[in-house]
Image 1 (cartoon, helix red, strand yellow):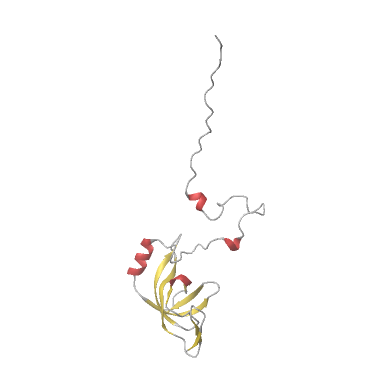
Image 2 (cartoon, rainbow, N blue to C red; image 1 turned 30 degrees about the vertical axis):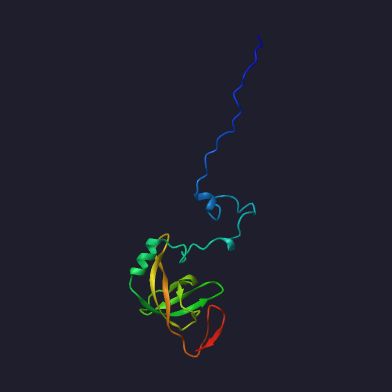
Length: 154
């Protein structure tokens, strides 16, 4: 009789699947020391914390759409930065507007009259941003640009 020892087959260790939140999270979590090591993502590459039309939740969009329509004047808008501010007609604090929430063919400029609805900005929902922004009256004697780049005098 030969005594051969039979060993159990070698099985690779099992790994639990990673949480779906972390691999898709665009930057390292707070408290990590990646910034001190000089690696990682540059601050200019971090995503904006402001919700765009594309990233806004359905419920926030539905609440904003059901809300009242406000009037205001474009205070400032930067096409290259993709955002600007609207001064409300009632004189309250300026409202942030993102490029994805502007409807129509013209890029807003200072003095344009607009109508808009508002949506709270997370996470604290203490400030608001304008959504469904429509230019109702173009500022007189000011050249306007279309989204395709054509300059039109008004």
